[in-house]
Image 1 (cartoon, helix red, strand yellow):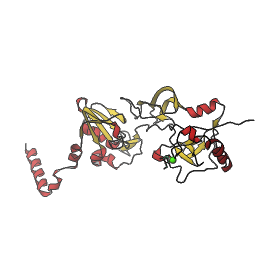
Image 2 (cartoon, rainbow, N blue to C red):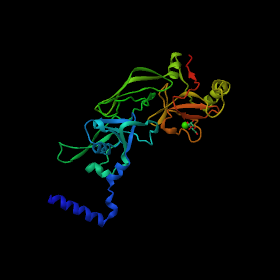
Image 3 (cartoon, rainbow, N blue to C red):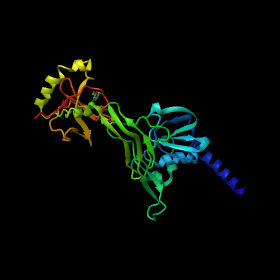
Length: 312
Ligand code: MAN
Ligand code: CA
């Protein structure tokens, strides 16, 4: 009893001393919780039997985490690698759920982990076994799968990218799928892909014992333009504006471009001004425009294509 009275008194003194501190930082996060909402299928990991505050803390110690969903009825927590702004179309009304963003909470809630700079696929954890460091960065997840032709937009309920979890994917438009379409996140932090996505355009060239055209000189580029693009582009595309081009065999690889058929680095290039710009971070393939200049573009675009064959 004595103790409580002293505490109350201290609080009162504190309030009078500095009125602006009456609304603590914690209140801020609580006041911005969105009730009856969740961010769908962008899950890093899930946790049962935890409090809402523990859920927020888990997000704060996980580098990739941007927001959480919490289901009070089951004390169930989901950490997300996107938020309402970065995945607007995944933000849905869901009774019983609450949604909260990482940025609404003070980093100090993460305790000593607040001062740890773990890398993107890591989280900060209390280290039980070492006397030197009480806290450590440990692997958290396998990241967002980035394999050529794999579309990660159709995650299902129960899917997550954390270690030992799995997710469902499909092949992007223009790719033919084989395999179950499941990815398993190994404890090593690497995805185990149970899916193969074959580029239909490449496959068609291969079925003709050919490969997507590789352009090695200005002369070859001119020839392709005058013999193959100029006479046919309008008929093939139905339009003759900047949106139309023709596939050739250039493909992004470790930041640069290679010719896929032979695996060679490009020597001659004829990029348009300011290209390749990897627009939206999603342009892994190469087209030749009607004027003969090159642009990097999304591989899922439906375009006519040029196969090349060595005739002996
Ligand atoms: C479109 C796409 C891009 C290209 C820009 C250039 O967005 O074709 O690949 O870089 O236009 O403005
Ligand atoms: Ca481009």
